[in-house]
Length: 167
Image (cartoon, rainbow, N blue to C red; front, side):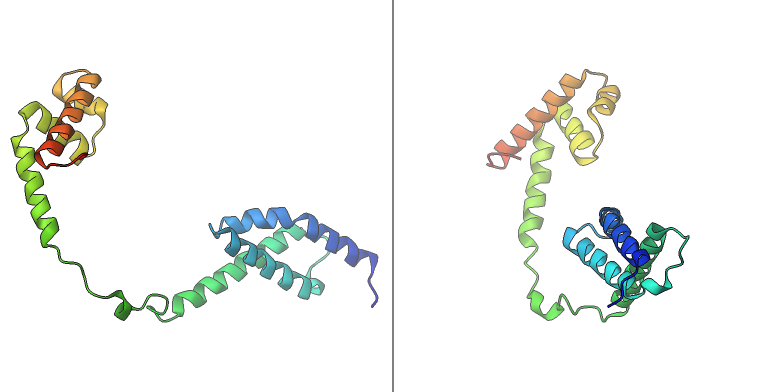
């Protein structure tokens, strides 16, 4: 087994670039195991095709290109696979009945209608529409603390109307 000094230097450079490859793989996969698999596959391909590396070019760019192409190939293959293999529809069972949610929504609407006007409008504006406390304070012409207290009281009254500990 004849190993030249140039090949050994190249292997050492590849080893030094493993942390950069891991970081680049994380841009493709959030899962660390999947990223490590991509790094491993990239290294295997690079070592198998080391004779195709052009001396004088950047090794890091060459490895990153191999990684990107490997990811893209796997992505295209996964896209072509038949849908539903991982999650079979027949195993999902039946859908739960929606009547209880309909009844709860109606009870919630009735409880909201029982709230005093200042509490109800703040609740609708902040909790339902998702607006900020600042925007609510500006719209209703009061301090942010007033908005927060009205919202808190609205939630407490709703919980009491609905016989719950928290709304």
